[in-house]
Length: 274
Image (cartoon, rainbow, N blue to C red; front, side, top):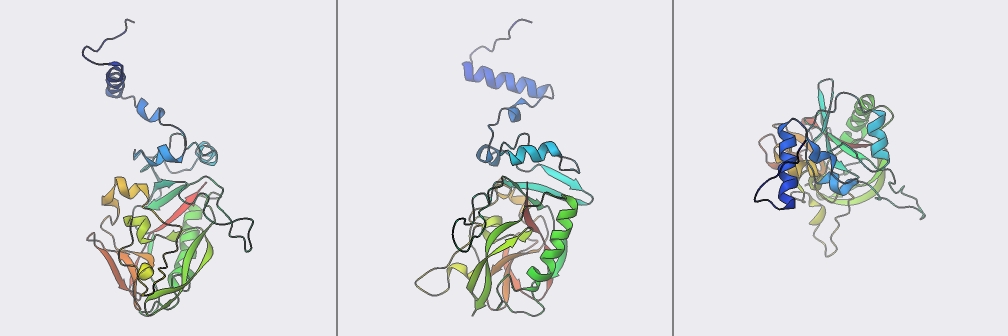
């Protein structure tokens, strides 16, 4: 076949025109040319239905760190739940090794999934208190194990256990203690959802030394591309202590909120798989 020409276009323009022509023919070659690795794949939104099964081929691409044919917004439909890719290698190299104690540096390439809506509902505590921080809450001791069971059933053998640095005490509404804790599924932090600390008392504890220790430092790329998915018309808990009686929450109206710990609200965890 003769080579097509595109008048008035330089070589870059020719490549773009050819790509657009291919796309018009129901071919999407642009995704095929995204470089391997977490950086490029965190920078591209696609939103493709990946089916109900995390396949051996997908797992191999994740374990190799290439993330071939996987992009932000791609999702698994497992029964009624939509689990969407929110980040690549978000926890990679977080943690410590060769020190005492060893907090298990994450060396496994992974994707982080977040369900579009809460998996179920639970309260943070039986009463409106935050004194035990996050890891001593009913949410962490009762609801998070339930979330683990659900996501492990959806992705058997692939949910990645990893360390996060979480609050375990609060005084006068401020996070007063924190520790490295092994988790699988876990509530998101304000940083993961919004990209910044908004209502958490973590960074305003009234002392000259500001505590803001967390491995969840940046917004998940999914919510950069799709801010409409931040609340998705659902109200759900976040892990951050906000006051003596309240934890952070995302409100169904799109408000970055904090609510008393006692009410039953949505549980929408993030979790890595490999």
